[in-house]
Structures are given as structure tokens and as C-alpha cells.
Length: 216
Image (cartoon, rainbow, N blue to C red):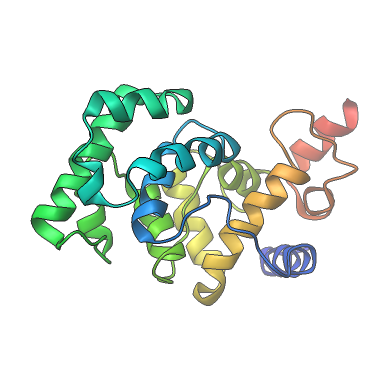
């Protein structure tokens, strides 16, 4: 199977498995999505969805958020990990949104990536899920699966994102990156992985990975 056929197989299989795509992080607008994505760094979405209602009950907009102290924010978000950095980031970016953007989340990669604690992946999620701009945020699942499926060399997430954008049609990026994440969680996890259950890797995967799995 050549690369084009493998890419099409991935697209078709994911469309069949996930005709409707749940959004992993609970939010109600661009601001609450931005905060949820920031909190999700090195933390599970399940945990983030448990913590954000507590935070948003006190502050679900930048104006209320800056009224809280960094210490107060830190206490609430502690279970998400990296709370000293994340609490400073949340407070700092909320102030910048008020000072520079009329309290609104900006709709450009450049402006988002200028905000404290907001990297390219966070900006990509917000642009794609809040504003519908085609983006391909690469998380650990996508990075792992692009390598397993022999669609990227797996050296770093920057390269994985470039490969994904080159291989997949731009108009399906926003759905596809979520479909791959759900597939990674359900069928192709990092631990406790079964090749038998993982139809995409079994069909299009890297030969060395399939052989390694067969030995086990």
C-alpha cells in the first residue's frame, strides 16, 4: 500500500469510527477553551474537566479572573499539575486580554502565541475549535500514531505537524486531529496496546512496529 492509499485508509476508518466527534475539553466560549487547553498541559482532559467548573464558578472571563490572586488560582488548579506556572499564565494572559484585546480572545496565531503560557499547540487548538480556522494541533496521541502509521519519522512534534498538514487535506484538519486523538485513546494507547484491536496500525503501520508487536 503506497502512502496515498495509507492516508486514505486512515481518513476513511476514522470517519467510520467517529462520524460525530466529541470535543475533549468542556468549555462555553473561546476564553474558557483557552484556559482549559492551557490547564491540559501534562494533565488528562478528564482531570481538567473536573477542575474547570470549580475555577469558572469563580471566574469564567478575564475581568473576574484578574480579581483573583495568582495564589487563589493556583489552589484551585493544583490537581492539574504545574500550578505555579499555569496560575501565573492564566492571571497574566487575562490581564493582557483586557489591556490589549478588549477582554476578547484574539483570532490569530501570532496574538495567541504572544500570551503567557500559550504555545503553538494551545494556539492551534483555540484557532481550530473556537474559531474554525484549519489547524493541526499535535498532542502525544497524534505524535505517536503518525509514527506508528509510518506517516512521520517521529523525531519531534514540529515535524509531525508539518507531515500531517502535507499529507491530509486542509479542509478536514479540524475534525481529523480530534478523530486521531480519540482513536489513540481507544484503540492505540501508549501502554496496554494491542495490535489486534488497532486496525489502522495493523493495516498501514510501520513494519518494525508490527513485527515488534507480533513478538509480544
